[in-house]
Length: 267
Ligand code: SIN
Ligand code: MN
Image (cartoon, rainbow, N blue to C red):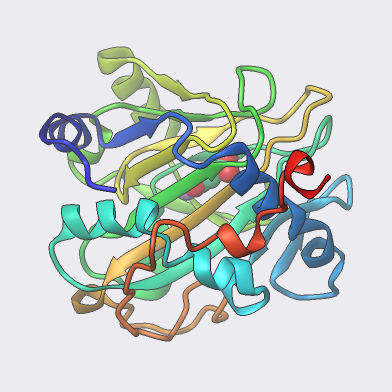
């Protein structure tokens, strides 16, 4: 899947793209179908919410499940990234952020680069975050909020917040968020299941608690140019993978083998 010239311009201007329903309902169902087994595993790559005991994020999924091993090479994710970056990329992080009904907790305002730089010694903000919405994401169940254009601002001052949630995060000063939001507004990344989000490493974003009765699972693949790899491999592998093998996209139908046959055909 290639991005149009207009989409490339929008990504450059706003720092993100929302691409409606790029994965089919059957493909999304196949992805979702792998989650109960993964969430039930006793793994340090499953991070549990501080208050509810539900899974908050399940990481390293391409090393734990064959569908995800293919999904990280899916051309509808990888080809746009290669088109934007114009150089080989490795799989930096692979996860599903769950945000369960009634209990999914906040992701504070942050840019991903703050963590990649401070924790992993990544030198340049080139990584791209590629999401697939696995549920309908609305204003009710904790959508991501983006600050358009914030990826082009000077570096955002950040500090490590290891108290607010169970996942330590380099977060952004709220005065900075106010200033930018008052200048250019805010966008909430809602959409039908199968919608793809692409955003830059320095884009400010966050998401509120899920107070609704509806789950909000989102798949996230972060890819980074091999030439811009970590210089401080201190975090566990599932937080920043050490394997720098260049990602080669698979065929567009690479999930077909995981998709259940329609009932009408098997009757
Ligand atoms: C979220 O899942 O709401 C936050 C994701 C992110 O920070 O990339
Ligand atoms: Mn983030």
